[in-house]
Length: 235
Image (cartoon, rainbow, N blue to C red; front, side, top):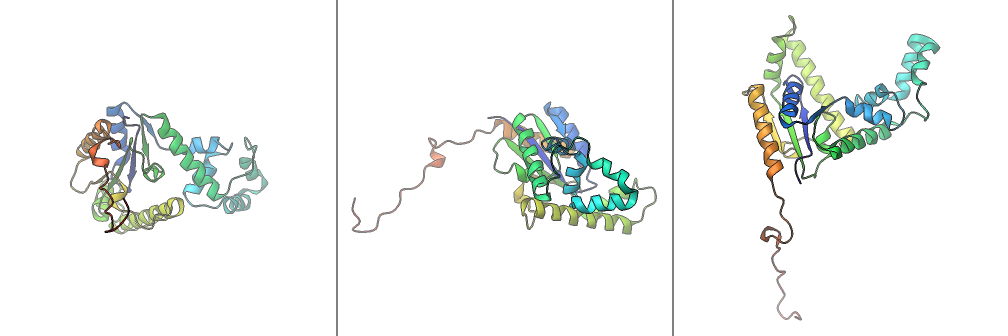
């Protein structure tokens, strides 16, 4: 069957984007992130920003009102060009994004980053689902090195808000009450691993999926034991 897609979910400040990009290069796959939102928007002739707002859990009408208050009627023009249909509801936007993820995976040869693609493609044997994460402390330390003098408190608050937003996204889009390692084929912490090591782990897992032969009903592993008969039961 072969490997069609690698889905990489991530917490902030773990370097997942660069890792995913390198994985895509090594496998000869496309790297896809915001292209998912663009594809979802095109399916309903929407501005990609509108669909992206659904991912950030913003209500379309609230955003429209805010824009009108800020800039008057001129802001309304931003919502008109190219829209031959009415703006979708948040539920419709979620479906658009999920469908875009599935269609992208169906094309094969792709590394999809974020958008909870691992949940949209759950159960597909030709998809590797990866979570790259790390402890809040280590993620904060990594960010502070390049933050230009930000405080540890700011790092902690940003990480907390991001993690809460991510949990909310999973709940709203996929009804996931609590994300667990078992939701993925591979979960990697960057606390004690360099990006190159994480990349190598993902590549090894991807090649294992590529080579894996799924059992068929003709193979012994799928045979079920005979149902025991009660004494006196008819043959």
